[in-house]
Image 1 (cartoon, one colour):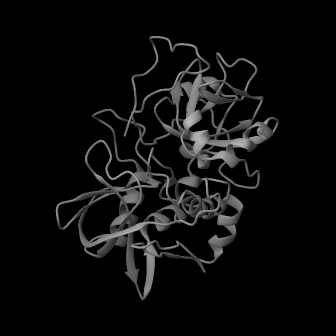
Image 2 (image 1 turned 180 degrees about the vertical axis):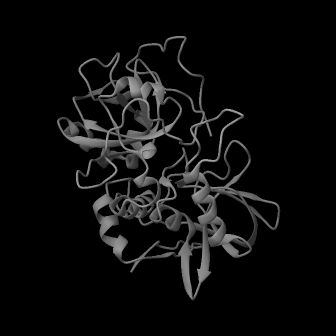
Amino acid sequence: MYRVAPGARGIAAAMFSVLAAAVAAAAQPTSKGEDAACTLDGGAQRTVVRVIDSETVLLDDHQEVRLIGALAPRSPDLSPSAEAWPPEDAAIVALRAMVQGKSVSLATSGRAQDRYGRTLAHLFIDKDGERLWVQGEMLSSGNARAYGLPGSYACMRELMAHERAAREAGSGIWGNAAYGVRSARAVGDLLRRRNSYEIVAGRVAKVTATKARTYVNFGADWRRDFTAGIAQKVLREHPEWAKSIAALEGRRVEVRGWIQYRNGPYIDIEDPSQLMPADETLPGRTMLPSEAMTSSGRRETDEPEKQKRPAPTTAPGALDL
C-alpha cells in the first residue's frame, strides 16, 4: 500500500497498491530532498453542502474550496450559447457522488488561495473504513488531469501516478480526442490553444542556458518553434534535476502547462513535474488535427521573456490564477 507521508499535523492518505509502481515510474527529482515524501498539513473537518463545478465545492462554513492538483475538464466553447460539455458534466457527477453531503478532511501545502479567494486544498473522505483522496479518485477515474500552480506543487508524483492509471486504461477524458497529447511540431495548432492547459510531446532539439533561464527547444528556429523555459530560481530550488536537463537533448519528453506566446508557443516550467521523459507505451498520445480544440482551464501569469526577445504586441496579456 502506498501512503502519503504525514507531517507534524499531516494527513496520511492511503492509495491503491496498483499505483505504487506508477509512482515509481513517474518519479523524477523534484526538490532539494530529491525523494521527499508527499506531506500535507491537516486542517479542519467540514461538510460539503454543494458541488459548485467539477473542481470546486462549497463547505458548511461558506468556504469555497478548489481541488488543487486535479484540473477538471471545461468546455472549449465559451460563447453564451454554449451547450453542455459531457466531460465536464461527467466530472461534476463523479465529484458530487463522492462528496455531496459528506464530511471531508482538508489538507494544505504552500499557496493558500487562488486569485478568486478560493481555498486551495486536498480533500479526504472516509468510506467503508478506508480514507480516500478526492483528487486521486478524480484523476484515476479520468475526470481530471494533474497540474499545479506556483507555490502549490505538493504531491505531484502521486497525482501523476493516479493520472497515469487513467491514461493506461483510456478512462474518462483520456478516451476523448479533445484531451490528446499535442505534438511539439504542430506549431500552428499550439498557437491556437494559447491560454489552455496542454500536454505537449516531442523530441528535444537543443537545451540553451542564459543568465535568466534555461530553454528547452523543440525545433531549429526558437523564434517560431515550441519552447519550454525554466527560470533560474526554479533551477536553484531543484539542483539535482537542473543538472539533468542538458541530457534531455535528443530525447522525447512531455511538457505540461499553459500555452503562452513567446516568439512561438511556449510553456513556462515552474516545477520539475512539468517536464518528464515521454512514455511511449501510454495511450492518449494521438496527435490531433488542428480543428480539434481542447477544453482546459485558463489562467493568468507573468509571461517570461523568451530568449531575451520582446514579445510582439499581439501576445496575450499576463496570466495568473
